[in-house]
Figure 1 (tube, rainbow, N blue to C red):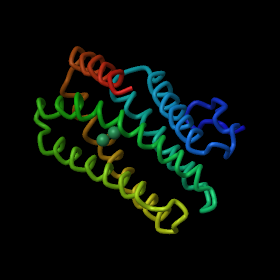
Figure 2: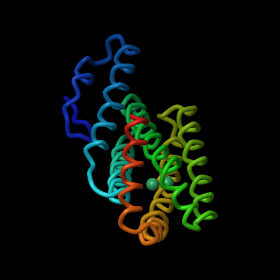
Figure 3: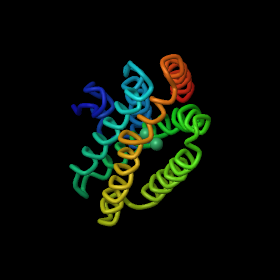
Figure 4: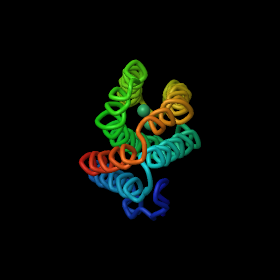
Length: 188
Ligand SMILES: [Fe+2]
Ligand SMILES: [Fe+2]
């Protein structure tokens, strides 16, 4: 029995083994999606704390992928699916609420740069999905992806989000938190 990376839940999908592989993969992908969504919905607090928690979850998924070897193609595929779900929800919250709030508070170029980065996140996800996971270039691309996403996270957490938090004030922060949670719920 394997343990879900995000929730610590045991996943019964893994028990089904390789029989009816297509069905199992579909089922497991749903478990992965649910696990990601529930894990994230559980995150409480202000908008920037929620986003930081999602950043940590994302990096844990990269850790798990980097611990696999080339023979674990099924596990790599599963983890890539979880990463896609996690990043889709995260991008939806940032692009629909946080970055627009940044633009409204003078951070126009920064918000545009972050959206540009998100485009390349989708590019990495697409390219990884196109390659065989056993290919040595696959894991090399995962590592390159991780470095770029870490730089993006650092920019958000260390500079741009604190600037927005300071610009918003108490009510503004509470409003952005509420809107971000609504967006996150819609993306779930
Ligand atoms: Fe982002
Ligand atoms: Fe982010």
